[in-house]
Amino acid sequence: MSDRLSASELIASLVDDGSWTSWDTAVVRSEISEEYAAELAAAAEKSGVDESVLTGRATIEGRPVALIAGEFGFLAGSIGRAAADRLVAAVEHATAEGLPLVGLTCSGGTRMQEGTPAFVQMVRIGAAITAHRAAGLAYVAYLRHPTTGGVMASWGALGQIVFAEPGALVGFLGPRVYSAMHGQDFPSGIQLAEHLADIGVIDGAVEPSDLRELLGTTLRALTVDALPTGTAAPDLTSRRARVDPSADQTRPFGGVDAWEAVTRTRREDRPGVCELLAAASDVVLLNGTQAGETDATIALALARFGGQPCVVVGQDRAAEAAGEKLGPAGLRVARRGFALAAELRIPVVTVIDTRGAELSVDAEEGAVAGEIARCLSELVACGAPTLSVLLGEGNGGGALAFLPADRILAAQHAWLSPLPPEGASAIVHRTTERAADLARSQQVLALQLHERGVVDVIVPELPDAADEPDTFSVRLADVIAGELAALRIAGPGTPAQRAARYDF
Image 1: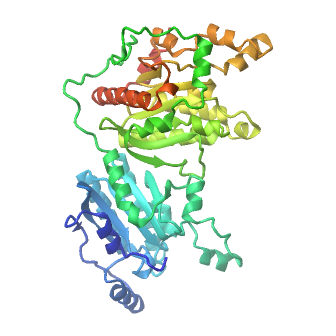
Image 2 (image 1 turned 30 degrees about the horizontal axis):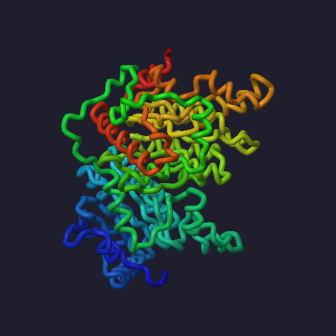
Image 3 (image 1 turned 45 degrees about the vertical axis):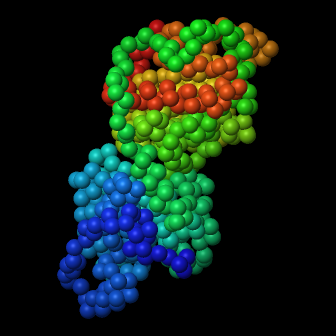
């Protein structure tokens, strides 16, 4: 970390040439000691800046953005009253101009020379960022080495999206302070950026040289392209289902037995959420709950389909095939996605494709049933437009938790069942050998849900998604794009409208 870039150097590496405009004004200080004044003067001479924070606006790949950046060379990037004033003013400026915000932290925390008056400025900084987010604006934080103390506990951790520099020390209490207070070293590696990504505290570790590309992709992912001419809003009060107009109408839907559909969706080569994301553009993969949990069975991402931005919350069949289980943490990751979409005011797209929620002691102690209930509740009440895609297997509450939405799409052979057919057979017939009979009798097929008005659009498989994985994924992505464009006009439905389709 000896080659740490200065704040000015990092900003220059990120923004378009000639686009940077500083918002900083001359620092005014009062009631400081001669000793502290001498420290400030020495810090300014050493760092070449007048405070530990630089702020301003610029463009990244042509898109306007506000930046706030910590300068470690000025008293270890510590935040005193003047730095806090500058931060708050910049965030408020970004909010007033409707600009997304990028925070580039690099700090040991609160400035000890100013003590408690500096410490309480965390409240003002947090309030300003909260107001920015409440305005529907994005805040992306990039945590540099080191980011600790009051900076981590305010503008460092408050990003909807948070990445960090590889190898960066990121945490609340610096290890030197811990050692001094407890007489022993803090365990190594716990506060390392890569470890925090592994456990779902941050979204990932990104090299400074790759940050411009990441920010550019993120800004594009949040940008709405013009709607196609003649795009109409769907009637969200209507329960009349329709078939995707791109389908070959000379080839009737149906003809596949329920058990045959179940077995087809279990093919290892069937495309899933990862293949669907490959057919999208401007994909930014996110990670975990931001609270120390992650789940490999959930793909969480920003993405665009046909120029329409969304948050994708998808169940990853490949991870489940590798032995991972959809547990309580995965459902909490999903809830992060729902909240992110509502806050950014862009649609959420859920992808249902699961063998079912985890059945284990750990899952029960992690409140798996409660997390299913909360997913259902929050998706029904989500303040953003919602689109659900029944892509393959739809087993139990883990699948149902992702279902309620303004619009529901389904692959032709997808299905939804209270339990895997084998489990239902075990309950009804005391044997798993009649699973096929249960699949037929329980009306599990997406086509049957389409007839009842639960599913709005059936996307054809020609003849099966596993036989045309790339083509099918592009076909599905195109249908999603059209639905998102229409939902952009219609806006989010009410909880009552979302629930009405199940009243049959």
